[in-house]
Length: 194
Image (cartoon, rainbow, N blue to C red; front, side, top):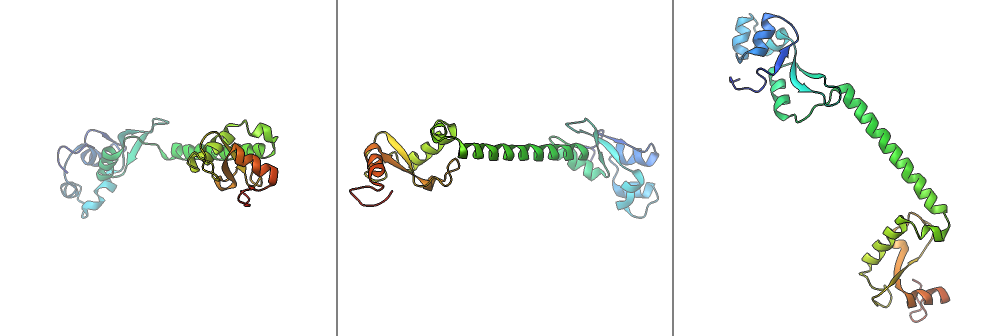
């Protein structure tokens, strides 16, 4: 490693020994240090020196990250924009999971509430308003029977999934086609049910 490596000066050895200070506080190569430490294998030099804390702190608790080798320290310092230690990361994941479960539970309760509320109240909800807009957009802002433009009604083909309707459960109709359907149970001129 060259003199300009980014772990240099940003690592503090945990052991207070000559080997740890030489390994973590110099740019000497692993081969040079292996010869200096009388170690046959340069890959084991980091084991002799021991770990070091590096200048990368947990965003939650502020605890410094521990690196076991200079290459790990270099990649951690080069790649990391932030760091979260293992206990904080587990706590973060647990909180995220609890929040997700709470959100799902709240959504399920809301769907159940929509399903059983009086129909007129349901038609005043934000959820119905969004579904209505989706059906009209899908129909190209035209009646799906006569293709007339203007104020459109959204008719339920089925109430089985009321509150969580699929877009296919509804059809966009003009006032005239909607009235015909409610008078005859089908569209009189075509003889087809909507």
